[in-house]
Image 1 (cartoon, rainbow, N blue to C red):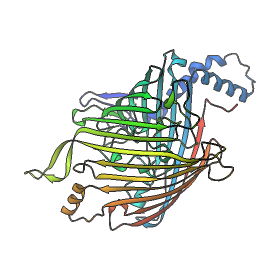
Image 2 (cartoon, rainbow, N blue to C red; image 1 turned 90 degrees about the horizontal axis):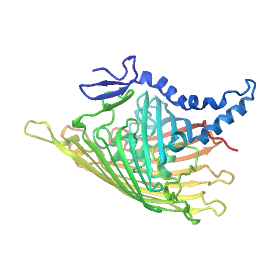
Image 3 (cartoon, rainbow, N blue to C red; image 1 turned 135 degrees about the horizontal axis):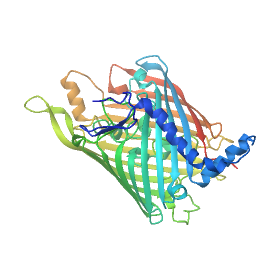
Image 4 (cartoon, rainbow, N blue to C red; image 1 turned 180 degrees about the vertical axis):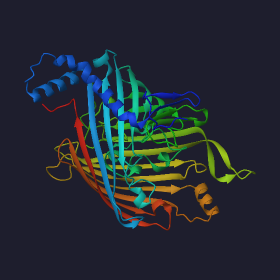
Length: 477
């Protein structure tokens, strides 16, 4: 079988024996550059005839205006985490994890004449090390850490109906861009569990369709009224190739099974009320610079969200502790989980309703027979605009606890390994938005019972997140 990093003359290939589609990571970088430049070529005719000596800034602004009119947005974000355990953990080493995000969004009606449609393409350049290798934790002190590669992460088409009250999306899709999202924590904290609960992130064979590997999916969303939404998704049960993290790979195998999820959400809004144009909770607003991979597509203009969700797999999975008469693990037909979450702005500044205190909490449970973590509990607070003159800065404090399931602990005891019941991470962070393009975010994390391994001392981790954001086709007037 051809591996994902093989040198091929064609960037997209198919192995008919396994129905395996893949884009090798060595050609994805140039491929993405070509794809993201296509809108520039399509619109270049509008610049023909401009004098060669035309001022560059004027030319650039003309290009921005042209593509803004056509509904094209291209954004590049480079996010870097630098983290060091100064006590406890495994190693006194500094690790740097980084992700280059390239996002192309096209309004189908403005660009192609397809009413109420959206095209989205998202490429990843993942680099650096995993800071958790020095800490020894399992909840991930850096949500950016993943194997180094170039990857076409998402490619999907969405069609809206009935004044955007109903939508259907299909393609390569990140489930956690809309499901199991607490916006305030997902946008701010570095630890992975504040983005997606540990029991959900570690579910199935290698987790759901999310960073760093996605799968083909179909998602439907219905806006029942201006405050209530319900969404559902089905996707391949095993995203990518578990044995090869490089490149973009789509496996359509019968033993992968299907992932499914449903979420019911209720939103509260600012006192001035909801827009009267019918968009309601579909309208978006970015409160801060920091790009949020988790929850990036979630409704943005609200003051509170309360949601319950259920997820499951039809994928056959090994029981973690029980075996059959032959000594092999019992095969379980699928797995399931349930979560509930809440976030609410409980206080806002009189001068600016976007500044104030937000409280958040989440709890989740998973089938302990096949999932290591059977429970997760997390919560905390975020204050936006705490310091006078710094309206977009955010301060956050949060606690995340991942609890081992009974079958996992029993399996460890059977082989003579001692484990604690829970790993707990306490995080404090402060995001400083120096400009629209530059973010610097000091961070402190204290990990109790890393990996629930009694032999690893509690770790104090210091670090910083750096963010650089370039929106090609949007400019301030």
